[in-house]
Image 1 (spheres, rainbow, N blue to C red):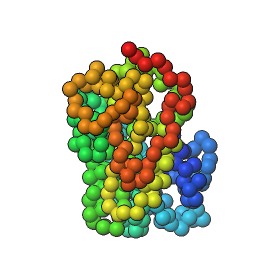
Image 2: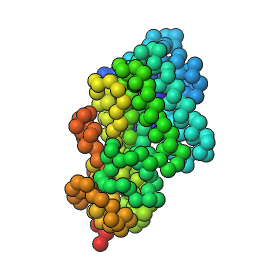
Image 3: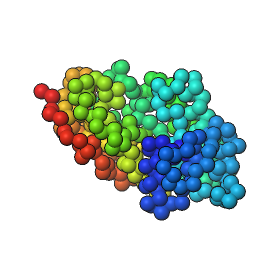
Image 4: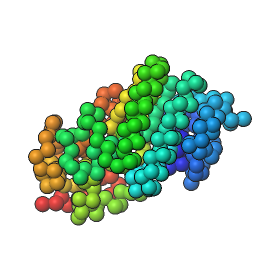
Length: 285
């Protein structure tokens, strides 16, 4: 679901490479067709059930669901519209897989439920899955509620697997040309502690989450292992969030959110960094 977007398109590539037969259900057609596309409105429960159970000659049922479809951020629509659309879509996905016994579901949660846009300092760094959830806007409030729904759906069916991937700000290689400008305005990126994730690495995490074979709910932070900056990470913290507890060693431009859990349980290792695509600007003094 949601295979026409930046992350969704990368996921289709990765899933096809991994041997999956993929169907893209989305409101908008993809720019580049890579698999069968069917228009779907996730706010219509009947359409969601039909998409999973089978549509004529398209398929006669699916083995797994990747749900990436949503209004993608806090400023893309009004708060009420974002809340109603996103919570309804995810509830429909979770509910529709239940009677069809589709136990392998991965969906896009978000880093934003950990306190972004950090008008108040983070509780500690590097952020991890144990940071208290502190949604500050309607978009992240929905992500918090989606994770709580996942807990309860898995309680109702102990065989159900629902994995929420808390993606950082998704970037494609074309986006990296803008990164050099961040050095001149580091405040513009403090909203998510200068974090990002390459869409191809996000797709890698989706494939690995589908292969994860333990039922139940799990959440994973999915981010690059470096920041979007050339200024050292602890120097940025000293300027913007002085006094925040540093719980583990952070060297150079290492990320301020931890992907240790995803490394340990999913085998996730970022392969793509912005520095591989553009010249690194001089470090700020």
